[in-house]
Length: 195
Image (tube, rainbow, N blue to C red; front, side, top):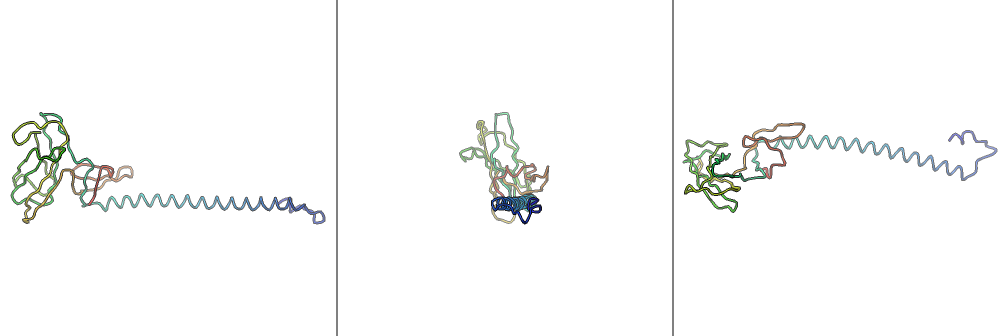
């Protein structure tokens, strides 16, 4: 550009030099436009990222009151001296109490635990299991689950499985949504289903 300003009109530059300088100017302008476009893309991506975090937090809040199932729906029995306290959610009050079935890893019922109406409430209940079958024999170390099906106060049938609870509340720790279900804090990666 400086060369063009200082050029003597009676002694013009050769065409090759002029084309080279024009090309360099065009390339410089294209590079500046590319830099501007990239900067706008970065700004857009930052806004999108912030929006996604915000949307994720809104999704966590929208989950309140829905049912969540934790990924691991079994509890571990390690020895014959152990008593396990199993948190079971009852969606409705029972009409006449309930029978909780302890299942082995193959789905076979190894123990039936009858609990009276007076000892149960709608919501989370703690059911104790001593690791023994209906005959009082230790069932062995391993992973077990629990389920219940009962007649509810309205005369209908209500069911529940270990690991399924309503989402009670939401907490945020370091920008991450933590769900409180069954009286315990869990992260989204510990949830297999929300319905």
